[in-house]
Amino acid sequence: MTDELSECIQKIDLKDSKSDDESTSSSSSSSGGELANEFEIEDVEALLKEGKVKNIVMVVGAGISTSAGIPDFRTPGTGLYSNLERYNLPYPEAVFDIKYFKKRPQAFYTLSKELLPGLYAPTITHHFIAQLGKLGILKRIYSQNIDGLERLAGLEEEKLVEAHGSFASSRCTRCKKVYPNSEVHPMLRAGTVMECTSCEDRNDRAYVKPDIVFFGEGLPDRFHDLLNDDLEECDLMIVMGTSLYVYPVGGIPDGVGNDCPRILINRELVGSFKEDRRRTADAFYCGNADDGALRLAKALGVEEEVKESYKNLKASIDKKREEINNN
Ligand code: CNA
Image (cartoon, rainbow, N blue to C red; front, side, top):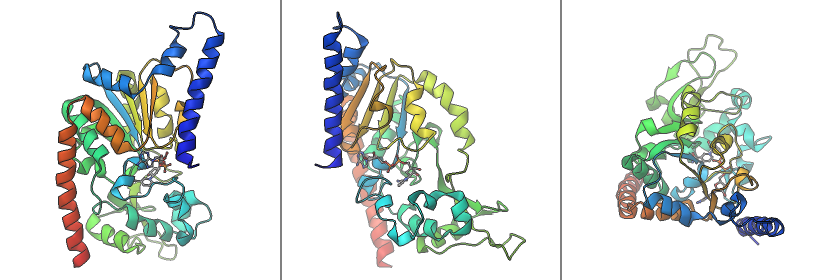
């Protein structure tokens, strides 16, 4: 049995066990517990169709970019953590550990070749997110991704919190000198470690790192400045393509009120979606992010717009990549 299937079955077990609980309690037919059992993606579609949702907050992770060709961390077999032999790391997270980077930056530079923006086209899900922005019902998206695909799909910067930073700027980890992308990106693309040329102590090397948040570093101010108000206003939480394993982002879905509808669109059940029985309106769509995104896009009447913008941008990025490969 695949992990994916076993997780789906776990979901069914969870529902069954809830029903059992309720069948033993009296007058439970209209209890919040039972409502939670029955809340499904169809209910979320209905809320969207009826225009009852005005302030969506999203939490997304690497799983929304796998269909673009970028591996996630934890999917067994294809995830980066299953393919780390070539980086020669003591433990998988070391590749994003600031202490490790300062001593041995090569693993990160090797990995960057696979993550650096420019070679990949945004997915259906990214275009769905951009449409939510255009419709004016997206309050904010908290993305853990560093691939820049939300922006590339046309999402307004104001709607986006890149909680784990991005490749958009880079600096020396010691003296903080900023280096331009025109110098840093070719080095990342080649997997060649870039040393800082202005640190005074030339006997103790320091390296240039994109402004990606590593383990051991703080999240951007923008994250802390916006989160509480966003959660207060949120009337639908959409979580897609993430294991919710990395904190503090992994805890965001738990910050909304117990009666706020939440939907997880993922290949497996994760985080508090697995066990939080206080919640009356949790839905789980077990499957590919793009399929779930299209269902919600259809409910909003923008399915064709999403497909069309995906097709057009993908064609132009694929063409550009082909030109680069041929040169
Ligand atoms: P993760 O821990 O690898 O989890 C990914 C989740 O997505 C898993 O639960 C998968 O089952 C699920 N998944 C994978 N593919 C799909 C799909 N097509 N449809 C639906 N679900 C899918 O990744 P997280 O984002 O949760 O972990 C946070 C890390 C990953 C962040 O610090 C990122 O910087 C880092 N990361 C980012 C990228 C990127 O920018 N594209 C790539 C790899 C890792």
